[in-house]
Image 1 (cartoon, one colour):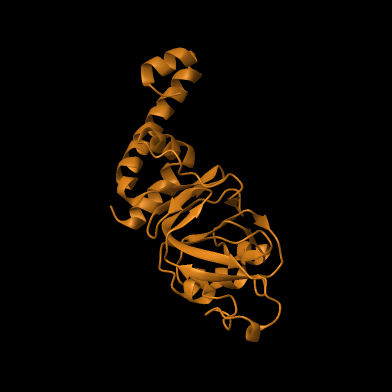
Image 2: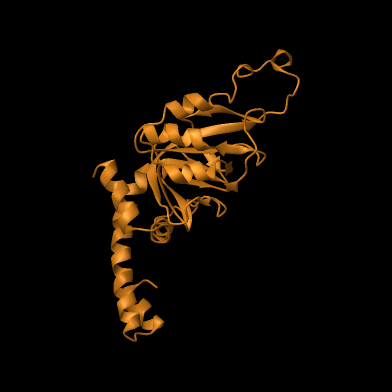
Length: 227
């Protein structure tokens, strides 16, 4: 199926709990990002291809003349290049910094919306929440904090492999999130994982009907194999 069809199935038919259960069975047992990363809008879902972004803190207050790094003269480092490189259906997913400043804001959301990106996932804070909510742009983050990234952090690379709490994210990996968590679904496993998750979701619906009809939990597990 096409990516658009895949994203639609994830957002309309599935939820992270059932996909995560299937990945466990398939041997992929470290695919959930930390629990602190949650949607700005609690009812939002996100599905798209990872466009990983690597951040780093900046501490030098002496000015450009005192530093030697290749990104010294670039405000925000490569952040604007990374933002402009977003493709339709991609998710800007960033990590690497401390929690001293916001990694995403309203103007970035406006640009990403124009580029038809699927959303942003930040291992850190965001700001301009009202503006982002008004745009309807999907953002997952660790919370809200208005302090600016400008003098405190830079993007040092993008479209590179990153890790968040030991979970590896490669460019193009499938990302799926709802208010119960964010999953990184390896590209090599995604077709089987989605197929199994759809089957499991259908079975769980049948289990729900049976339990409502009086079936015990033990009998339901024995008959359907899920609970």
